[in-house]
Length: 204
Image (cartoon, rainbow, N blue to C red; front, top):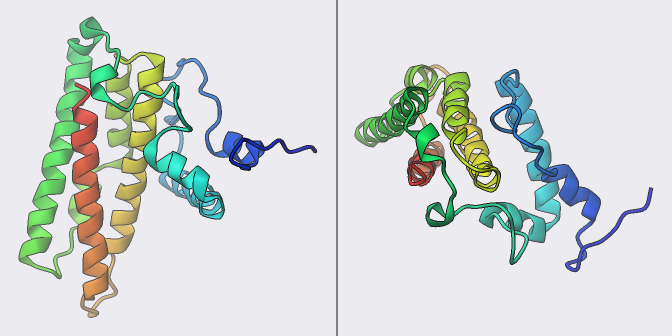
């Protein structure tokens, strides 16, 4: 099988594997409703392993563009949104849900700041239910045009990945205190989630 290379000497096959061409939106976002937490984490881990091997690709994933003219809209000021769809009851309900996730993250941050040993696992599972979070994002992006959807889908994937990693970082063996390193990871994930939810809400 021949492998083509981009101007940055990045295998074109790798780029297609990590960032496939967006299909027309027949099912809200690229995240299917049937995808489980474990499936998502497995796929993300494989993608990140590939990104680590190609720094230029990694930077593209971080900043959302392969260069000038990228069709992915990541700036709310340039997003194209159908205001009629945005105002519907179903979409507004999803927006309220996303705002509640942001509030929950802020509450968890305050809890951990007050008690470094606090177990926020129950709050993560209750307030950041993986399936419901994904469904609410899907509902909101119905109001976006395809280029805006592609940009926000990337942001949504980051959020879902961080929720999964936050739950993992929070776990502690019985009787073993949370180390400073583990505390830093938990706080870092909460901070990153807070910003990501804020960034998404800037579109609406």
